Length: 547
Image (cartoon, rainbow, N blue to C red; front, top):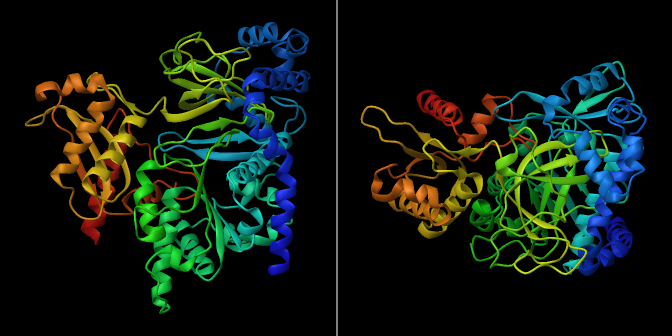
């Protein structure tokens, strides 16, 4: 493959060179992101003015107004809404092939998603959204160039994409439905297709245990230099590859022995910090040695939201991600405490403030209008057309961090715990005690006979959880959350947290039992009920009885 790899690396570098230079001009993005985002909204209103939704909400008139009048009018005309508000028109588009409903013309592709607490949802993926996703994927490589990564060097080997099944179903109207991985497979074009793994046959597999095994057997003998996927599935793949290598008599103690030229790990979907020590051990056998370059993404089936735009630094546990401001989508942010109100306030990316948690609301080039994505974010830098005010966020490109989901929290006893608190506390306890953790989730413990109110953390640990782990977890939660600290003071309001160790792989077996194994499916890090944790513990108990 030598001739092709030379072409791929140099062609890709040439393709993204101008974009890399534009992304490096942070002052330009600080001053112009507000204008760029309003231009995205105006373009969307004009494009959809003639469709059913656009006519009903006066998009043609709105698009003719000044920027601020247009934005105010749009917010007055279109309410903030979740997927269920779009369910009926989406059904007409997908099941009946009806054109000009939410977006002009027919939408031929729909991404099927399913949460762990709700049924299947179908997300429209228009041609324009395909283009938006393609441009975002190129930005990954543009930022890589900015980080000093040699694309000819990286593309001198293979690129592995650990995605969902690429199998899609087509109905009688020619409408395709499937995992987003399958719908966007066409974005992997020549010359990148010449270095793409795992290839069509394995990519089509939907049985995830069999797919991981096939992927491991295929990749163990390839010179992989770039991988993309969720860290949880990457570790499953790494473990299986090492097993296969040893079965074949190869002396491999870590992934670096198999892939000495691996340079880039692109990941997203879950917070990386809790997985960091395990990934390092898989990679090098040493928690102090990381994969040379990592790039975090904020992708969603609805739209590509943000990409890490600065290299990793050991002192930063969670890097900021730069908003994809010019890829055909418009972003708003609703204060978390207002998301369930009848008329929540919404702010554009240049109107937000630091230290405030916001729920992401999307207007997309596939016909979702003021759609509640559900992720909760905080901002590290905010684009301002003028000099930042005293006490304001740093003036720069719009950079944010994901801190949770607005439906995933624990507040059974006034403790107000969110996903970020749990993730940070698990990572801190693992680091402090030297315990290697896997997947985890937390839930309230309700008072009962001989049982005080509190918190339970179910976490994958090889062996028993030492008492010090629960104590460190408790301290880390207190350090982040004054409400939890108050309820835990003197052990009067809430008892110390209970840590329930689970065998590695327990969460994947739970997901499999619910038909949600693989792809982008994941377990919520916390919930305000015991439904998830009880069903998880039941699966583990059944495994122990049958095993």
